[in-house]
Length: 147
Length: 176
Image 1 (cartoon, one colour):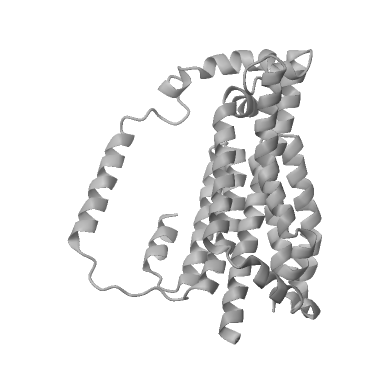
Image 2 (cartoon, each protein chain N blue to C red):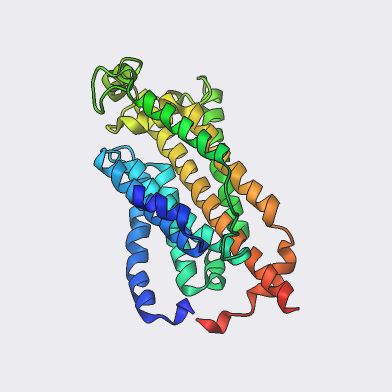
């Protein structure tokens, strides 16, 4: 039903790219302005869910198949913990980013960027996965009622 | 916000309740914005007003649209709610005024964070330094919680995946 409403389609087509861009801005500019991985991940998931609502979940699944969102979900946590382990291997404590580069500030910067990216991936993956599962569940019930 | 909350309790149509809770979250987001917590504000706007409303609508599609009317809620719940509310309001009398620099929360480690985070960690945004570096363990824990939540949803209602995908991938495609 929603896919036939042309106003919604046009407006969301206009809005989706800026929202996605804003998510990336929040992700990588979190050191300087407000924001960070969590917010960026949520905004990114919002883009995806808006697309799915307007253009149909079937199309959205082509963009982000469930294996991809699950991989995002796990790889973010792994990236975060991996940065911790890496800093441990390089002679510091767990999550001590100063060890990641020769200059402690550069190391901190690299570490924070990486873990924020990990947070963003996991949050976006989690939100999209939950949304897709709800949608899939609805379809299973519909199929059961039909057949 | 009070009006919205009252409407939430009174309305029986769960569809309207989902919408109202979205409005409530949006109002909460503007409140955070007024209190200068921009990052919290847009998290609330995106999660509370956006995604959770969508998820609630999804749940409605799975269950039923109208709330079951239960008659005569007893006196005990009311008493408990009033007592808890009174206790919370009593507790706010002890809170320092908003933005008071002498508040206990500003006398702990935060002064050190504000002074030294620039040279120790680098980013001009101290919130990021605190969350990602000084409190790195906590943030790792939070990410793990989110991961666990998604895995939990998968385990609870994500059953029969392969069967469903075969069925649902081909229909509805000409719909768009």
